[in-house]
Structure formats: structure tokens, C-alpha cells
Image 1: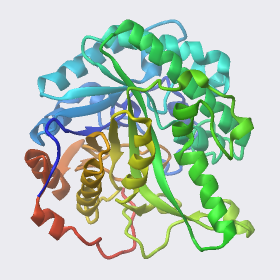
Image 2 (image 1 turned 90 degrees about the vertical axis):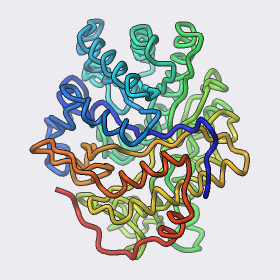
Image 3 (image 1 turned 180 degrees about the vertical axis):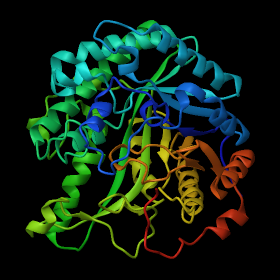
Length: 444
């Protein structure tokens, strides 16, 4: 039996746009209206949390969870610049009360990829002059909700927001190969975090403020210097950018001089979150046909779940959590695995991912890393950004036409782990080996 420390947090993570439905005032809704969602799906009604979150919160309670991460949709709260929606604030207050009533501690993310359309049209985080507007939003949100929450994440995955929006063109604003803009956006987001950190602590002395970053293992396809160098580039841009800002106020190679320094962000985090999912392989893209994916691919023989619309999601790789925690644990603040999971409609591979990620997490705690909690993504299937409904991450399946929930085996497995505050020898033995690779399929 691998037992976790007393008081360890067991939860799930969610986000406003992916769960609420009816978020019509953010840039992702505009992106959808332009036909940019590659699956052709629409988000609304998502999981219908804006009207009925109680059912899924009951599922969380019944799993025995003691924490839950949600986010706020800034566009819903400030649909027009300077005009606040009091009814939306009250709905979030109600949601937080419901979370408390079910015995869970809320973590609230202020920016989980979405912001108002007016903010996007003025340049969003590429425009440094707009940073005070985000800070004003953070101040207003915390002022309204501070009696119901102490744990705040300013941003979810700055690295994904910047690279997918300005380097790969997968997220709004859909720009490609804008290396300098990517660097500037990352700097501005970390400056916004630093300013919001100070403002939140000024409002709420007991506040705990952090952010969460995504960690993906990049594996060189061969031992060639070209493949290894490209993997090193991706690792530096994607995995280590937030660590470098928080440690020294400036990124290392390859951004370096492209990215303005942010010395004010040093030591401005009370905890750090890491979102850990997969491993990708990298081959230096000298052939033109490989440039469209930047040389990134997935080996067909590795464990993987549902396939995206155009490409595999990635190799399911529980050991990725080792690199993530060992890197960000150097910041000497508590670490939370804020997201972990696999898109797997058939629930064929998810149990193995959960058990083995937690096995590695237990190892990290034994090594002395201050890991305080694990949040699975997610409680129920949800809208997955540009992939729409093709990737199914839920412990519970969702019929998006009827809004009916159906438990997967992983839900009962996670419930058993939470109840025991650990992983049993039987679970470790049963899920010691990855499932045999099969052709990944797409959800509906």
C-alpha cells in the first residue's frame, strides 16, 4: 500500500468555458462563430453548469473528493469594458457555496484561456498596456468572492496560451510562427501575474496565489543532433518558460533577448500547479511534409487514448509527472498536480494512467518534494477547445444531447483511492503494465 500524507488534497479540475455553457462574451465563442473549431462542434450547452452544476458536484462529493478547481469566465463578468455583471458574480458565489456545502475546498482560476472579446480585439496579452485591465478584473473578482475562496490561480497554462495562439495557430488569435510575439505574450502574462499577486494579497491577507503550467515530455525520435536539439528547443519554450520567469525573472534560450525581463515576478507564487498528460516525439522537420506539425508526432505502438480530429493526442505517459515536479519543485513552494488524465472514451487506458501517475507522485513525495494534491481532469466529458467533443476525459461519460452522465470504471477506482488515501497493492499489481496499444478512436 502506498499511502499519501494526511491532509492530501484529492480533486478534479474544471474550467468555465468547457463546463458552463452560454459563455457568449469571450474570444473562444467568437473563434467558434468563425468556424475555427476543427471538429465542427459547438460548445453550448457544454456540461450545463451555469444552469445545473449540482448534479456533477454531487458526483464529486460521492467520490469523496475534498477539493475542486473551477474557473471564472471574465467575459461573463465584464462583457463590456468597465461594466460588471452582478448576476454573474452572484452565480459564482452560489457555485462556491455549493462546493463548500459538499465538503470541498475550492481553487479558483481567474484566466483559463478565455477573456472578453473587447480585450482580445485590443491585442489581449500581446498589448502590455492592457495588463492593468486584467489586474482590475482580478481585484474585482477577489473582492467579490474572497469570503468563499482563499486559493487563487491567476493563469492556467501561460505556455499553452502563448504557443498555441501565436506559434502553432491552434488557439485564438490563430497566428503561426510568431516567435517574438510568443515571447512577449509570455512576459506580459507573468507581469500580469506578479501585479495581480500583489493586489490579491492586499485584499486578502490569507490568500494563497499561484499559477499552473502544462508539462509535456518531448522525446527526440533518434539520437541525431538535429532531433535532440529540436526536442531541447520545444522543452525550453514550452516546459521551462514559467519556471525561468518565476526563478529569475527572465527566460533562457531560445527566447532570451526576445522576451522582456520581468524581475517583479520573482518569488511571486505561494504554490505552483503542474498539468501533466503526455509525451510527444520530435523529428527535425527537414522534409516539407513535416513542417505542418513542427516535427511532432506520436509513435503508433505507444499507449494512447482517443485520437484528435487530425492528429493523435499524444502518448499516455505517467512518468511525465517526475520531470514536472522535479523541475518546478525547485521553486521551494507547494506543488499541486492541477490536471492529469487521458482522453479515453472506452476507459481502456485511464485506470493505468491514474494508478501509475499516483505511484510516481508518491515516489516524489518520498524524495522530499512538497506535493500537496492531485486533481484529475475531469469529472465528466467536456468541450475540449479546438477538438470539440472528440476527446473524452471524464470519469463519467456525457451524452451531450440528453446531458445524461454514465460512470466509467475509473470513477469507482478513483473513489477507492481517495477513500484509502493511497493505492493498494492489488491496484498496483493489476495496473502495473500499460494496455496493449490499439488503434485510437475518436469520440462522438
